[in-house]
Length: 401
Image (cartoon, rainbow, N blue to C red; front, side, top):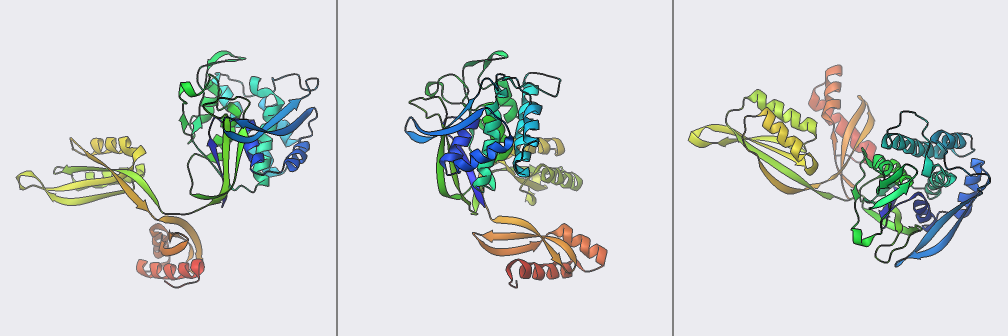
């Protein structure tokens, strides 16, 4: 899979994202030709090489004819109407519209507005539309299938806006980040002058299009998009790495929660296990143990992602009589796996495919799919497993188990 990873070195804005894509090889002439399909007059777009601290990259410059575009008070509907009436490809229209609608929703929440058609003020300039649509076009020309991003570097200090003096990051930027999987980090004040480093347009593009994680990948191209600011301590630049996503085994850190129980009923234990699995526990198991005064007891153990630790602790305290829970941090190797559907002689069945690198080393039919087939067709479950396993190996690998 061809992917792009955006590295927020000194922030992220719409023009920096577009500049990074052009610096990594997106054809500028194709971009200009595609933007003409918006059927909007009175703007020009250019690029130039530049340097921010020690990085050399590309800066995108959008110039507007003030006679044709004097106002910065366009609404989201204005921009969406331009896109929908354009001759751009349908996928470009849909992605750009999705980004712009998120900007409108963020502005509405940030400034506690009730009306739906929100005036964009600072983002109401035509260059916002050019940055959003241009980014989607550039990603398409580079055949990017999936996008990832590093944590977003937020600004600091106080900035002036049409709404008055506000803190950086601005309310709209924070609303765009809230409720997504985006990770944000504040810069050390001594490294950056006051102001926004991640702008609303940059936040809208990345939180809509990207996953905030670092994928294993081979890098084919790199690029840097430059902002208009400069600082000797931190380059006002956004990096991009383009290449192929790789599949490797990964190690994840988990919490092992354990408690000894000598006064919990079987029903309580079963229900607690069910609640932990519903939460998203990696595993839950019981071990018979000998407790004080010769009492037989049960060791409840559960393995959960670190982010779920507090919720898992709450479930155990609420559902069992325990007064204490032991906690350990452990690392867990996870084999690569994916769920596929095969058209078997017994119907459409889900199977779990286990990989070591690029090699398939195991195929396991999903229990629920097999159970339904066994019940509906009156076939022993073991026979369903045998048939599905053989057919899955044949269809997926052309081998026999």
